[in-house]
Image (cartoon, rainbow, N blue to C red; front, side, top):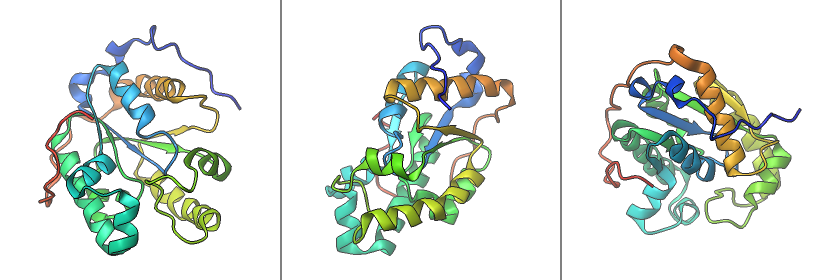
Length: 212
């Protein structure tokens, strides 16, 4: 079913209660629009945007896929988790987490009490949007088979951590998706939690709180 596109110009942003919101965290698989729609959402809400994949790449000077392949998954997940913890602790605004950051139990705990938006998509949508030759898609080997298994494994985890789930299959572009997310945030209204507590336990040396 197609989702009606809210008009960004007429959204009543006062109902978003940004003084208590502080942070909107976007989670989900690669290719669902966490970065592109996240940046547009931040613009809509009049706040800043940060992407932890970009933090990892800025600090290591390597694409995330190269880190995964050359250093191994365990090393990559540690870097990814540290980047997420640091960003959760210091960034007020819209924050896009790397797709695997939620595998880290420290990150799972840090997400408690925050506004977490799961950008959900079917396999065919993710495969079409992500492509298998893009630098940020960390799925070596049989990409289609691994992607299908990846989505099945992660779906329940993403859903369990989310306070809001937005289906992205029918989103035409980043602006459309940002409007859908903003509408869901508006609908959540005053039921949102207050300012999140800082995430502890991170010594990740990434960029501090700069808008991305």
